[in-house]
Length: 229
Image 1 (cartoon, helix red, strand yellow):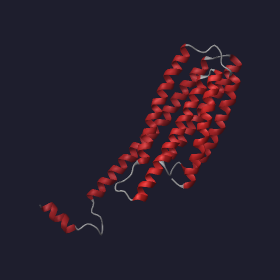
Image 2 (cartoon, rainbow, N blue to C red):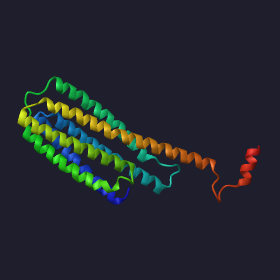
Image 3 (cartoon, rainbow, N blue to C red):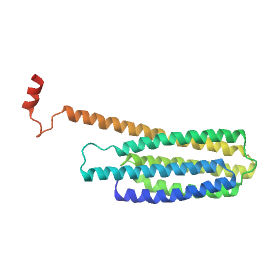
Image 4 (cartoon, helix red, strand yellow):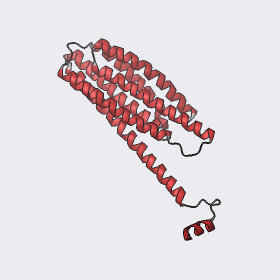
Protein backbone atom coordinates (compact mmCIF):
# COMPACT_ATOMS: atom_id res chain seq x y z
CA UNK A 1 0.00 0.00 0.00
CA UNK A 2 1.53 3.29 -1.10
CA UNK A 3 1.43 6.71 0.54
CA UNK A 4 -1.35 7.83 -1.84
CA UNK A 5 -3.53 4.89 -0.85
CA UNK A 6 -2.96 5.58 2.84
CA UNK A 7 -3.92 9.23 2.36
CA UNK A 8 -7.13 8.32 0.54
CA UNK A 9 -8.05 5.74 3.19
CA UNK A 10 -7.40 8.22 6.01
CA UNK A 11 -9.57 10.89 4.37
CA UNK A 12 -12.41 8.42 3.78
CA UNK A 13 -12.10 7.07 7.33
CA UNK A 14 -12.59 10.48 8.96
CA UNK A 15 -15.48 11.37 6.65
CA UNK A 16 -17.51 8.19 7.08
CA UNK A 17 -17.07 8.01 10.86
CA UNK A 18 -18.32 11.57 11.25
CA UNK A 19 -21.22 10.86 8.93
CA UNK A 20 -22.05 7.61 10.76
CA UNK A 21 -22.68 9.66 13.92
CA UNK A 22 -24.90 12.06 11.99
CA UNK A 23 -26.76 9.20 10.33
CA UNK A 24 -27.37 7.44 13.65
CA UNK A 25 -28.81 10.62 15.16
CA UNK A 26 -30.98 11.16 12.08
CA UNK A 27 -32.18 7.56 12.31
CA UNK A 28 -33.28 8.08 15.91
CA UNK A 29 -34.94 11.36 14.99
CA UNK A 30 -36.85 9.90 12.05
CA UNK A 31 -37.58 6.51 13.77
CA UNK A 32 -35.92 4.75 10.82
CA UNK A 33 -34.20 1.42 11.51
CA UNK A 34 -32.92 1.36 7.91
CA UNK A 35 -31.06 4.61 8.51
CA UNK A 36 -29.56 3.33 11.78
CA UNK A 37 -28.59 0.08 10.06
CA UNK A 38 -26.85 2.04 7.34
CA UNK A 39 -25.03 3.99 10.05
CA UNK A 40 -23.71 0.71 11.44
CA UNK A 41 -22.69 -0.20 7.92
CA UNK A 42 -20.71 3.04 7.80
CA UNK A 43 -19.04 2.07 11.08
CA UNK A 44 -18.16 -1.27 9.49
CA UNK A 45 -16.60 0.61 6.60
CA UNK A 46 -14.55 2.61 9.07
CA UNK A 47 -13.47 -0.57 10.82
CA UNK A 48 -12.37 -2.08 7.52
CA UNK A 49 -10.29 0.98 6.70
CA UNK A 50 -8.74 1.13 10.18
CA UNK A 51 -7.77 -2.54 9.90
CA UNK A 52 -6.26 -1.95 6.47
CA UNK A 53 -4.21 1.01 7.72
CA UNK A 54 -3.13 -0.79 10.90
CA UNK A 55 -2.11 -3.94 9.05
CA UNK A 56 -0.11 -1.91 6.56
CA UNK A 57 1.61 0.04 9.35
CA UNK A 58 2.53 -3.18 11.19
CA UNK A 59 3.84 -4.77 7.99
CA UNK A 60 6.00 -1.73 7.19
CA UNK A 61 7.28 -1.62 10.77
CA UNK A 62 8.23 -5.30 10.58
CA UNK A 63 10.11 -4.90 7.33
CA UNK A 64 11.92 -1.79 8.54
CA UNK A 65 12.95 -3.54 11.75
CA UNK A 66 14.08 -6.58 9.72
CA UNK A 67 12.28 -8.94 12.05
CA UNK A 68 12.39 -12.64 11.14
CA UNK A 69 9.41 -14.39 9.63
CA UNK A 70 6.88 -13.58 6.94
CA UNK A 71 4.30 -11.05 8.18
CA UNK A 72 0.67 -11.81 7.40
CA UNK A 73 -0.97 -8.78 8.98
CA UNK A 74 -2.99 -7.90 5.86
CA UNK A 75 -4.52 -11.36 5.66
CA UNK A 76 -5.27 -11.57 9.38
CA UNK A 77 -6.89 -8.13 9.34
CA UNK A 78 -9.01 -9.04 6.32
CA UNK A 79 -10.22 -12.26 7.94
CA UNK A 80 -11.00 -10.49 11.23
CA UNK A 81 -12.84 -7.79 9.33
CA UNK A 82 -14.90 -10.33 7.39
CA UNK A 83 -16.03 -12.27 10.47
CA UNK A 84 -16.85 -9.00 12.23
CA UNK A 85 -19.08 -8.05 9.33
CA UNK A 86 -20.95 -11.35 9.56
CA UNK A 87 -21.61 -10.71 13.25
CA UNK A 88 -22.87 -7.19 12.51
CA UNK A 89 -25.14 -8.49 9.74
CA UNK A 90 -26.66 -11.01 12.16
CA UNK A 91 -27.40 -8.34 14.78
CA UNK A 92 -29.04 -6.05 12.21
CA UNK A 93 -31.10 -8.97 10.86
CA UNK A 94 -32.46 -9.81 14.31
CA UNK A 95 -33.43 -6.18 14.96
CA UNK A 96 -35.01 -5.87 11.50
CA UNK A 97 -37.22 -8.92 12.09
CA UNK A 98 -38.34 -7.43 15.41
CA UNK A 99 -38.97 -4.14 13.59
CA UNK A 100 -41.22 -5.91 11.08
CA UNK A 101 -43.24 -7.54 13.84
CA UNK A 102 -43.82 -4.18 15.54
CA UNK A 103 -43.40 -1.43 12.93
CA UNK A 104 -43.18 2.18 14.19
CA UNK A 105 -46.28 4.31 14.16
CA UNK A 106 -44.47 7.15 12.40
CA UNK A 107 -41.33 7.62 10.27
CA UNK A 108 -40.14 11.09 9.26
CA UNK A 109 -39.29 10.54 5.61
CA UNK A 110 -37.75 13.93 4.77
CA UNK A 111 -34.80 13.75 7.25
CA UNK A 112 -34.41 10.12 6.25
CA UNK A 113 -34.22 11.02 2.54
CA UNK A 114 -31.78 13.90 3.00
CA UNK A 115 -29.41 11.89 5.22
CA UNK A 116 -29.43 8.86 2.91
CA UNK A 117 -28.71 11.09 -0.09
CA UNK A 118 -25.66 12.54 1.66
CA UNK A 119 -24.52 9.00 2.47
CA UNK A 120 -24.90 8.01 -1.17
CA UNK A 121 -22.68 10.91 -2.23
CA UNK A 122 -20.01 10.03 0.35
CA UNK A 123 -19.97 6.40 -0.77
CA UNK A 124 -19.71 7.38 -4.43
CA UNK A 125 -16.69 9.58 -3.72
CA UNK A 126 -15.05 6.94 -1.52
CA UNK A 127 -15.55 4.14 -4.04
CA UNK A 128 -14.15 6.28 -6.87
CA UNK A 129 -11.02 7.09 -4.82
CA UNK A 130 -10.37 3.42 -4.00
CA UNK A 131 -11.30 1.90 -7.36
CA UNK A 132 -7.88 2.25 -8.96
CA UNK A 133 -6.06 0.49 -6.10
CA UNK A 134 -8.19 -2.60 -5.40
CA UNK A 135 -5.82 -5.05 -7.12
CA UNK A 136 -2.77 -4.03 -5.08
CA UNK A 137 -3.92 -4.85 -1.56
CA UNK A 138 -6.45 -7.26 -0.10
CA UNK A 139 -7.64 -4.85 2.58
CA UNK A 140 -8.02 -1.97 0.12
CA UNK A 141 -10.19 -4.29 -1.97
CA UNK A 142 -12.15 -5.12 1.18
CA UNK A 143 -12.71 -1.45 1.93
CA UNK A 144 -13.85 -0.91 -1.66
CA UNK A 145 -16.36 -3.79 -1.33
CA UNK A 146 -17.65 -2.18 1.86
CA UNK A 147 -18.18 1.10 0.05
CA UNK A 148 -20.07 -0.62 -2.79
CA UNK A 149 -22.33 -2.49 -0.38
CA UNK A 150 -22.99 0.67 1.61
CA UNK A 151 -23.69 2.54 -1.63
CA UNK A 152 -26.37 -0.03 -2.48
CA UNK A 153 -27.84 0.19 1.02
CA UNK A 154 -27.98 4.01 0.73
CA UNK A 155 -30.00 3.59 -2.45
CA UNK A 156 -32.31 1.22 -0.57
CA UNK A 157 -32.84 3.75 2.22
CA UNK A 158 -33.63 6.46 -0.34
CA UNK A 159 -36.23 4.24 -2.00
CA UNK A 160 -37.68 3.39 1.41
CA UNK A 161 -37.90 7.08 2.34
CA UNK A 162 -39.73 7.90 -0.89
CA UNK A 163 -42.15 5.00 -0.40
CA UNK A 164 -42.84 6.01 3.22
CA UNK A 165 -43.52 9.59 2.11
CA UNK A 166 -45.79 8.60 -0.78
CA UNK A 167 -47.60 5.52 0.55
CA UNK A 168 -47.00 5.47 4.33
CA UNK A 169 -45.72 1.87 4.10
CA UNK A 170 -43.64 1.83 7.30
CA UNK A 171 -42.99 -1.91 7.00
CA UNK A 172 -40.63 -1.21 4.07
CA UNK A 173 -38.14 0.29 6.52
CA UNK A 174 -37.69 -3.15 8.10
CA UNK A 175 -37.39 -4.85 4.72
CA UNK A 176 -34.63 -2.45 3.67
CA UNK A 177 -32.85 -3.16 6.97
CA UNK A 178 -32.89 -6.88 6.15
CA UNK A 179 -31.47 -6.15 2.69
CA UNK A 180 -28.71 -4.04 4.27
CA UNK A 181 -27.85 -6.95 6.57
CA UNK A 182 -27.63 -9.26 3.55
CA UNK A 183 -25.42 -6.74 1.72
CA UNK A 184 -23.08 -6.63 4.72
CA UNK A 185 -22.90 -10.42 4.87
CA UNK A 186 -22.35 -10.65 1.12
CA UNK A 187 -19.44 -8.20 1.26
CA UNK A 188 -17.83 -10.22 4.07
CA UNK A 189 -17.69 -13.57 2.25
CA UNK A 190 -15.25 -12.60 -0.57
CA UNK A 191 -13.04 -10.93 2.02
CA UNK A 192 -12.84 -14.07 4.16
CA UNK A 193 -12.32 -16.28 1.11
CA UNK A 194 -9.56 -14.05 -0.26
CA UNK A 195 -7.71 -13.93 3.05
CA UNK A 196 -7.85 -17.73 3.41
CA UNK A 197 -6.64 -18.25 -0.15
CA UNK A 198 -3.70 -15.91 0.33
CA UNK A 199 -2.87 -17.56 3.64
CA UNK A 200 -2.78 -20.99 1.96
CA UNK A 201 -0.64 -19.66 -0.88
CA UNK A 202 1.85 -18.18 1.58
CA UNK A 203 2.00 -21.43 3.54
CA UNK A 204 2.59 -23.45 0.36
CA UNK A 205 5.33 -21.07 -0.74
CA UNK A 206 7.05 -21.41 2.62
CA UNK A 207 6.91 -25.22 2.42
CA UNK A 208 8.44 -25.16 -1.05
CA UNK A 209 11.20 -22.85 0.18
CA UNK A 210 12.04 -25.42 2.86
CA UNK A 211 12.07 -28.33 0.42
CA UNK A 212 13.97 -26.74 -2.47
CA UNK A 213 17.67 -25.92 -2.10
CA UNK A 214 18.52 -22.23 -2.28
CA UNK A 215 20.79 -21.59 -5.24
CA UNK A 216 24.18 -20.29 -4.17
CA UNK A 217 23.41 -20.91 -0.47
CA UNK A 218 22.78 -24.64 -0.13
CA UNK A 219 25.57 -27.20 -0.18
CA UNK A 220 24.28 -30.17 -2.23
CA UNK A 221 26.94 -32.42 -0.73
CA UNK A 222 25.56 -31.75 2.74
CA UNK A 223 22.03 -32.60 1.56
CA UNK A 224 23.21 -35.93 0.10
CA UNK A 225 25.07 -36.80 3.32
CA UNK A 226 22.02 -35.94 5.42
CA UNK A 227 19.76 -38.14 3.29
CA UNK A 228 22.22 -41.08 3.40
CA UNK A 229 22.30 -40.92 7.19
